[in-house]
Length: 151
Image 1 (cartoon, rainbow, N blue to C red):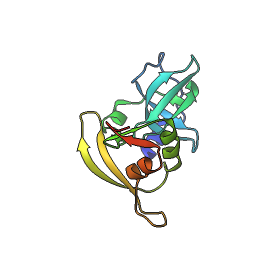
Image 2 (image 1 turned 60 degrees about the horizontal axis):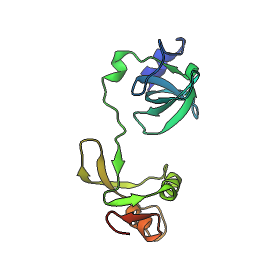
Image 3 (image 1 turned 60 degrees about the vertical axis):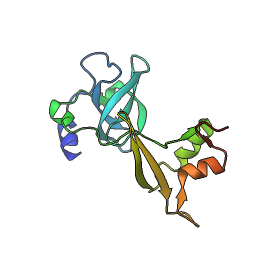
Image 4 (image 1 turned 30 degrees about the horizontal axis):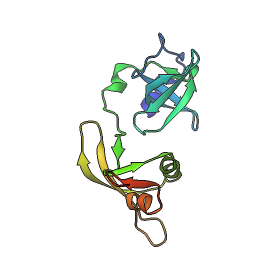
């Protein structure tokens, strides 16, 4: 990241043309004002875009003056954040909101299966009283999710 920060320092921001979904860019994260590699999720207006930070997985909406075109050397490393899912579960908005509460907790991840586009994982929280807690089982037990094929 120091290399990205050094590259961005003093360079004009913005993109050479209108951004398109899937374009890679460098984006200045609003929480820490640090430049990271990102991908355009969608254009919200002529002044802002929503990006996903490809090495962390989080996303945010930014003004176009907080993004810039990346040089090719910053795109040689594949994205370090990988899409994951909890196999065999269906869940709705309430589960998504609960999962946001544990976003920054340290969890144990175990790979269960692989698809072409994502990795199926089991998550355990060892930092809770009475733990470890299996996140998938917790979601089912508290009504946030159901097993696929069951009602």
